[in-house]
Each structure stands twice: as C-alpha cells, then as structure tokens.
Length: 127
Image (cartoon, rainbow, N blue to C red; front, side, top):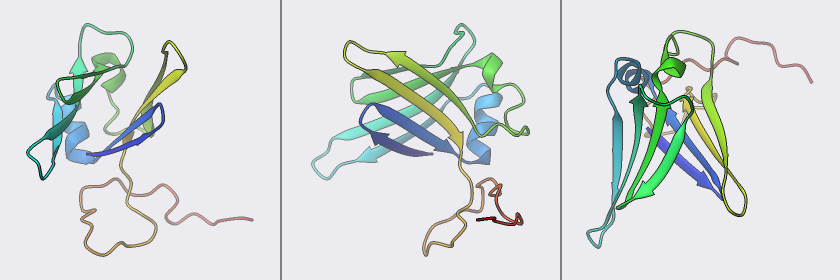
C-alpha cells in the first residue's frame, strides 16, 4: 500500500492482494520506521457498521475505514477507487482509496508484479 498526502487530501493505493484482503474482511496495515525510533502506521480497514468512508489520526496511526458495502465486487470491477469528502473546521478533507496500477513507464527497482494492469495500456492516445 502506498500513501500520498497533499494538503488535506489523503490517497492510499492498494495492490491486488491488499484489495482481496479488504474484500475478505481483513485490514491492510503498513508502517514507516523513522531513524529516531518513531513509527507512523497507516491502515485501511473494512467496516460493516459504516455507511461512508472515515479517516482518523490517533497515536501515530492513520486509520481509514471503508464500508463493506462499498468493497463488494471492487476487486474485479472497473471502479478505480472509493472516494469521500468530509468537512473540517477550515476546509474539506478528501480521502481516496484506489487500485494501484502498473506504471506506463518502468521504474528501476520497483516491484509492480501485483499491481493492476494500467487501463491505458493498449489504447490509442489521441491528441
């Protein structure tokens, strides 16, 4: 799972096995270990009791919960992601949980063996 944060936008990209785990009811958890001993965890968890995506930060962990109803069939269908926006006191907070696609250009040292095929591969690009 990859995490990207830009301002008030949180984006998590998951490979095929991670989405399978979610759709089968298992959380996906990753962490970043900093040299001074601190750790940042981030997780996406299925939630049977929710009707919309939620996000929280507590105790060094970013937790995103996705309603089980939104996860049904996601592994095999054409949806790229699951999205939600929530208002904060000052501005909108955007959450994106997306399929991680193979890059159109190979990157040395990056394992993309479990990424989803890129939807643009094989399509003619028109200008």
